[in-house]
Image (cartoon, rainbow, N blue to C red):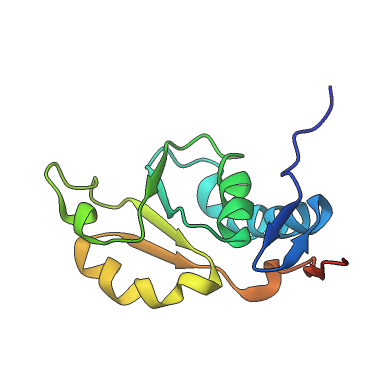
Length: 126
């Protein structure tokens, strides 16, 4: 069976290879392993147009917990019914600023380190 890898991406004039995104996803998956491997609590992430979001989606899809995709706008996070108490929200480094607003909603926030940046984006060549 061929492993599923993220596709290469072009984002803001830079090319992110499949290997770079996979390296980021694997590093984050490994750093979260102890927390999520046996958990059945929902896990949430903010899905935005950024390579870190793609890598995080691949990382979190390796775990058995249900995955909730949230928008960047926090208004739906406060909707009824609310997110289940204790939902783990995983934020990549680029979304660290959301931690302060997420904790009062009862979310268990994990902010990933930049060490997941195993691969760097390469400039596009014309």
